Amino acid sequence: MDQKTPLLSVQNLTIPLPAGGDRPYAVENVSYDIHPGEILCIVGESGSGKSMSANAIMGLLPDYLQPTQGSILLKGTNLLTQPEHWLRSIRGQQIGMIFQEPLSALNPLMTIGKQIGEVMQVHDKYPGEQRKQRVLELLNFVGLPDPEILYDLYPFRLSGGQRQRVMIAMALALEPDLLIADEPTTALDMTTQAQILSLIARIQKEKGMGVMFITHDFGVVAEIAHRVAVMEKGILVEQGTADQVLNRPQHPYTKRLIASVPNRRMDETPRAEEPAPVMEVRNLHKTYVVGGGMLGTKRVVHAVNDVSFTVRHGETLGIVGESGSGKSTIGKCLLKLIKVDSGQMLFQGKDIVPLPESRFRPMRHNIQMIFQDPYASLNPRHTIGKILTDGPVANGKSRADAEARARELLELVGLDASSFNRYPNEFSGGQRQRIGIARALALDPKLLVADESVSALDVSVQAQVLELLRELQQKLQIAMIFITHDLRVAAQVCNSVVVMHKGKVVEYGKPSQIFERPENPYTQQLIAAIPGKDWNPAEVETA
Image (cartoon, rainbow, N blue to C red; front, side, top):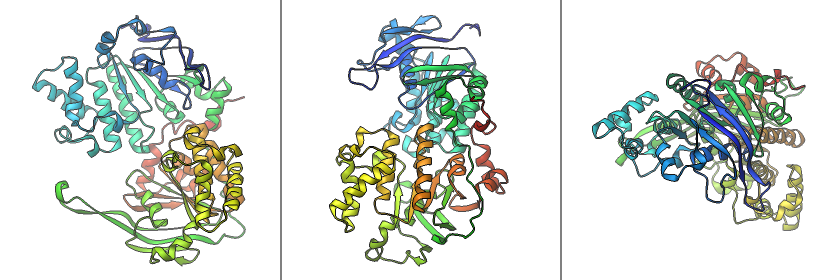
């Protein structure tokens, strides 16, 4: 196909929303092209319409959300005028799609080999033994180890990065001309994300495919994009080459998104007087026994192996590492949600490790957690008021005082007092995270443990929550442990950073030291994996 002729041309696409929505259109008058061998990144916050336009291309929109205007031309054929049986014939063959959450997209009752092979079976490709050989070839092509073993495994036996590679293999099974990747790296660790981005870029180059890559991460855009389209509330507000949009943005919304990208450093000026420690962790150990029975031989996993650190009043300690590094296990240990094998956890000088639950319970309000997924951690049947007051009332505060404090906290975290009588489902992700922060503060803790509390948020909402945490910490002088896999975020909010790998602390120091002079090879690897690390948002022309 001629490189100058668009592989895909979306023209004036408009998709109305049902009456009563926050705006009349999910997608309004949107136009863009994707050429062979080109990666177009579509960027925007949740609700901007970027995934909606992708689903329109695939013909996967529900009946109540259908285009009323425009065209979607694939090699000159308007997909919007084709019958369902024709669309079914091109899905997989001409257009492949990588979904955001592979665990929900993969059938838990089918083995990996059968699922990838099903794509070929539906399109009558690769009969008999050829089909299995093609599946093994694909598994090897996307960099998965031991394809013969993986072929017979079920999705739950694979890691997140491995499942995403399976989704890529499935999308590539019939060598489509267009690949749509919908937030395929959002939930992945930095190193796994870097591997997936590198894989997609390599495949695109080798196969000459057009790629539509949907993301809210400008670091990812800087890493792989040829062209960029920015969407806000269903409208395409800016598009151009990656260099134009990233370094010379024109639209105020694009400038605001770029300004929200984590890039700042904490003020590391030493304090005149070092604050007292709130929590001192010394030689902490926690092991798990896995395997046995149907899973094979038992083995001991050192989730936390001889870990030591200190967090002080008014300071934030970052704990950084990949999935399985032990960082979330440390958070559970600090709240005594799991039993520690050995070591000390000195809370304001008192070791809480040996305390039985009956003696620790009166202290529990002093250590609170902000969870990663606020929607899952907030009871959907309780009002926000009840969520914020149950803890204080259970700890002896009167209902009237607890309600007054809850209203103060809602105002403190930037929510209207009317939120008190509403339910979690009535709020956005960023608002729910603010409610989670308010709940953690309701018991006036001395130590907050934030476990991946911004990883699932859009970049602008993430910036707002991080700024809120900074302001609250300065005002209340709370100590905070910030658990994250994103070194950029850690550098923005933390006074000191602990880097963990396979249960051990491999590096411990100031953010500037970790970023600019990393000593451990694993830390160097994490920093090298940051997408778009050579692009500095602070140097963007936003005037």
